[in-house]
Length: 358
Ligand code: IPM
Ligand code: MG
Image (cartoon, rainbow, N blue to C red; front, side, top):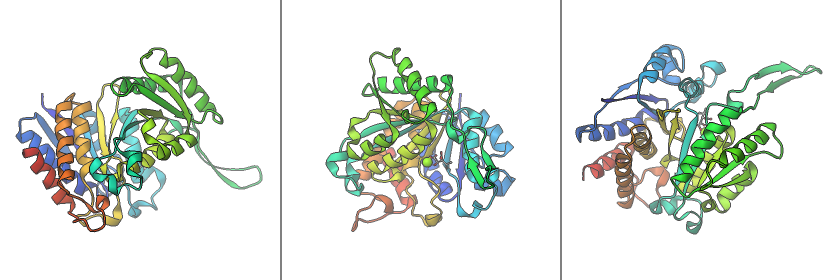
């Protein structure tokens, strides 16, 4: 049966980078992959078209799709909207609605881009790290939240952090399973010295570990983890953490790879249906200038084939094409060193297509 992909280009550079990923989908289809795709609105683009960042039309299409490819959402144009209508609510809404609780954010240091990283080559050479971020719980969604007045008459904002045992168990299992297929080491990141939520997190992860005696579990406080990531990132294999800590650590880890423009991600439900997106944002400052790096989005297509379609072979081909393009010296501005020739978004997409056809 044909795999049905919903494409949500979103805002800012989203439509441009997604257009390059669609070129890759077209090549795969021409080569015999049984895939079909359609487009929908999410984020600011959805607000403009349908008055809501995650409109009903998108909800229906997303629930029916086998996998979803997203560009990016957000932009200054929407900053003044009430929180419920902001583009970010679109992405948070679709994650929650589809139960996409497991967010995989690999950080790979491409040898070819070592010079573009702000780290010493020996610190990052060969780095292959997977950050697993819980995506549908934590302070992102916790109730109650809002504004209230303090006893002495000041306005106060508040949010609630919480994790339940089943939520922790299921993300921990994804972490142990992932580690089992890789370097067999899992580091769970929390703030157990301060937070009740983290105390429970650590207890549950430790208990689940008894089901995985072949995986070595360690625990780390999030502040230390932030430091260790820049000090010695190669000590990590898989890191598992909550929604808020994972948001922060995964942006940090992206710098190890040279550019945030290189990192794809997968957000999976219990059946491995997934939403795939680059981890970077909508970069409105460079939109419609043919400057954005489409590689993270193209690599996200690879992750889609690997995780949702069980086709690691296609993911490997896409990874190899991206590596070939980097080896040939193709660079968008974000990964170019001074003096290197810079190519545009479209030219980068074309280069990957050419590599796939070779
Ligand atoms: C991410 C983003 C989102 C998040 C924003 C856009 C809501 O930063 O995917 O990491 O915080 O999860
Ligand atoms: Mg983020």
